[in-house]
Image 1 (cartoon, one colour):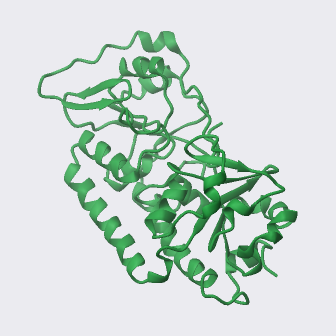
Image 2 (tube, rainbow, N blue to C red):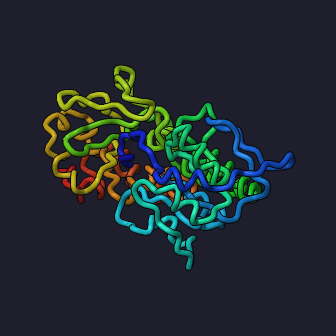
Image 3 (tube, rainbow, N blue to C red):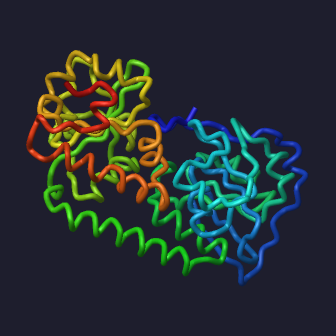
Amino acid sequence: MVSRVFRPDRRAVLTGLGAALAAPALLRADDSLRFPNAFGEAVLKAPARRVVSLGYATQDSLLALGLPPVALRYWYGPYQDGLWPWAQPLAGSEKPVVLRGEPSAETIAGLAPDLIVAIGAALSAAEYQLLSMIAPVLVQPADVPVYGTPWQLELSLIGRAIGREAEAERLTREATAHFDKIRARNPHWQGRTAAAAWHDGGETGVFLAQDARRRFLRDMGFVDPPGYAGLTPISDFYANLSPEDLSPIDADLLVWISDAAHARDLAALPMRRTLRAVREGREVFAGEELGGALSFGSVLSLPWAIDRLEPEFNLALDGDPATPVPSAVENGLAG
């Protein structure tokens, strides 16, 4: 299962091959919208109006652009309609169909989409070809990792595909200006080290390179701890840590992205106490909702997250170990 964790495993997303093979082929036109991608090229005769959101977080971009999807992919978490707090206000009265597990091609075809957005859905070439017999399929460009599409690029691609490119550009400018404003009022963040780590099911790890959580910290002006240089990545997204050596994540700011259910185990990690970040009160615990916002990494979720994390970051970085960081205190990491 693809987890917000944590370790993006490749999984099939389609069944019902026979039903989809009976779907009509896509007609192409010379003046169509064209989207080169990892599997070839998606072609739309006109901007899409009925969109199935098959990516694990692509509903956020569609909602931000004012076009609720007819169906969306449930990823994880307590919101069974797949809409987290940052997205709920934009859904209005719309109730997209929720696709769970491995949605069948027959189900998707029955929704009669004119576009399937599968950025970050980890389609195989065969699955892409199959879905393309139902409707054009929008996936990441060939030079972008499956789970590494920056929110700006995702928003731009979807904006073009639904005829709302100008709106996508406006949203990008607004979100970028918001982040710039936060960086400007927090010059003490710039150049400090920060690590986004997790503890889940007995494993501890750190997010790297192409992961949205690590990218978010760098966008806020933080840099990687020196210890990252010695890590052996599992992928571009994460590396596991030995329980005997957590030193690679000893940073000026240590952000734990985990569920409250794992907080007690995290607090009890013997080697956690060897970290200066722990002894000096520089931990922030991003639990279910904040961790979800960072994991979605969207134009909606990231501004929502930073507005809530900014005061926590500043409490952690005020230079006084006695200053309580509320999220750390609430989850048993302080004291």
